[in-house]
Image (cartoon, rainbow, N blue to C red; front, side, top):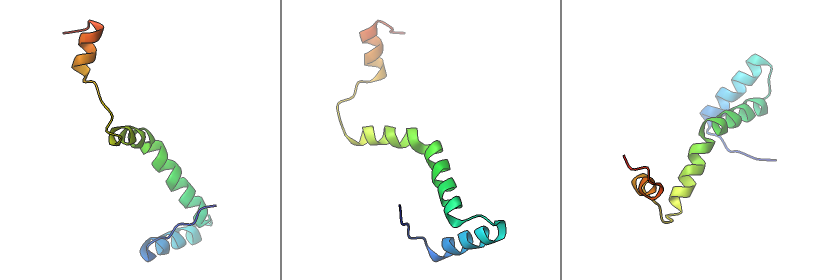
Length: 70
């Protein structure tokens, strides 16, 4: 179970859409979340790794280490 507070304008749009299409507001919220996660999940996970500020190795250093220098 998850509770989400929406701005009144978003709530109004969602209510209107649900009423006009015969689908529930929950249906559209679930669809929106699923679509967002499908599009952004890899980016958000990569961002979380970068935010940890752990030591990194540049691509040039990796190439040198592997003998792949151009």
